[in-house]
Length: 130
Image 1 (tube, rainbow, N blue to C red):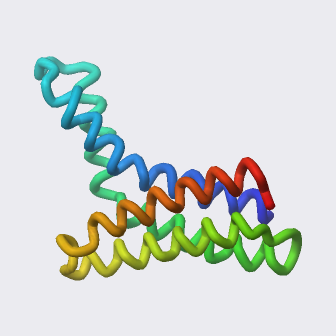
Image 2 (cartoon, rainbow, N blue to C red; image 1 turned 90 degrees about the vertical axis):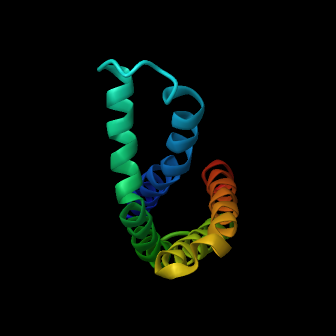
């Protein structure tokens, strides 16, 4: 159960990270493409879905990690890298929620750095499991 919840957390977190990645790809490469139907239209539909649902996907990641962590601590194995990754994910989500309620300009950079730190911690957790 713990491993399943960990992968649910990972999928939600990676999907939330796609918000930033898809926007950058669109800005630098996709926006300049011809407006013909096809790849550009499909890409922008995917991007629109991710951007529109970014907050819900992030909250789903936080809920999944909030269930995953106690399952691991009580039932199996609590790793230091996992606790760090979970903590950074919760910080990232809290920053996102605060930004949603009117403090976006002040915290967007901190939110992005926290997400990048979460990604690094997640990768360390998956690779090392220590």
